[in-house]
Length: 166
Image 1: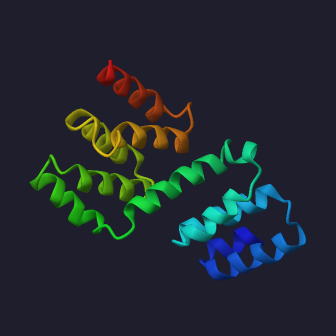
Image 2: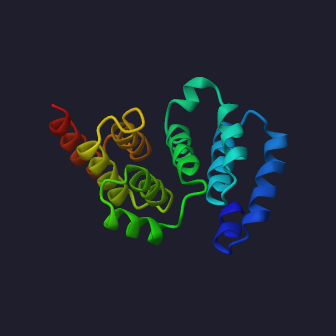
């Protein structure tokens, strides 16, 4: 029922339905994670964060909740940032602008363009490893968390990060 509504683009109804079911099953972890994911897709990050934080710690630390929590960090980073096209121009114009590069990476994560995001964080790590308390390295690790260790991008970029750091 939820999937049918989603396919028709009835996001608000899906959220309402999930909330109703959650009231009947307040301990349903899978339901909380699904609702948090939908809220995140609809730019309702604060509510998604509250929901995910209400999960037991061991659930928060494993997929898919850990990946959603990592995505929320990128939603925070992108908050108030220019759109992707403007950020791409900024980074091309001034390749050393780590702030714009990090915002671009965040926008890419939210658009599920992980390879571009990984590339941006690698560039921050290469140019300015100490920027914002190692934002380049931390950004890479957060994306690894979203994608999971078996993802080919994670394997490739983890190796590249390691060789850059050592």
